[in-house]
Length: 258
Image 1 (cartoon, rainbow, N blue to C red):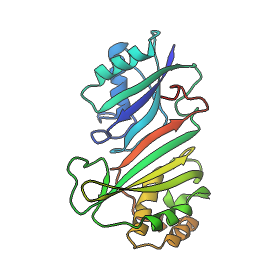
Image 2 (image 1 turned 90 degrees about the horizontal axis):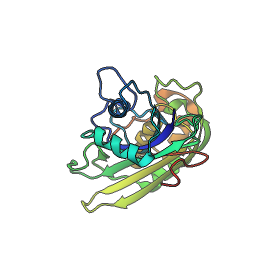
Image 3 (image 1 turned 60 degrees about the vertical axis):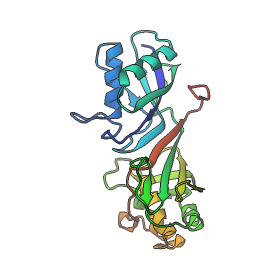
Image 4 (image 1 turned 90 degrees about the vertical axis):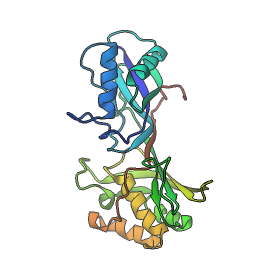
């Protein structure tokens, strides 16, 4: 059966996460339903990461196996037609080897978190960014983030329901940038990169670093919390609003750099 890689973009607000669930709307379920319109049978796709309810994606990657030898462009166009009106789009499609796997072939995952500091509630971007009503200190958050980069036991920043075999992970990067906004607020963008992540790890990082930026935590307390290896030492876990699976890296880009 020909195998295809799909680069998927979605707004996670109306979905109960990526993974298919009975009687609940999910991104996986929406794509599998669209595939069934093209080749009527049960379809099972695999994604590079399982995003939670309300989490978005700019570059999720999934795989599907088809009976017919589809032209990749035509397959993406057909899927996009049948995905309407769901806020899901196939932005690229490529034929891949039969042993290629969206999850197990991946060597890197990149997340983006958007946090907006402004007093007024959000209108157009509600659900797409996390708003806090107070200012944040970029330098303090960067100093706190520096303690998290590298190979550590991240038990403190791991959900109690995480199913990973080990809490030890290598965080390759946690970079924070600040951008002024035309609405008078300030946007902070957290760029996080690793081979793999624990459940709620990025949201635990951002929630904790927001407390540092707000002055409630000293940057050194991030190191203390990390070394505690205790979930109770973590700061508040921020909401899914603002979290995006930005991209997935492979030894060879199946989409040719798209």
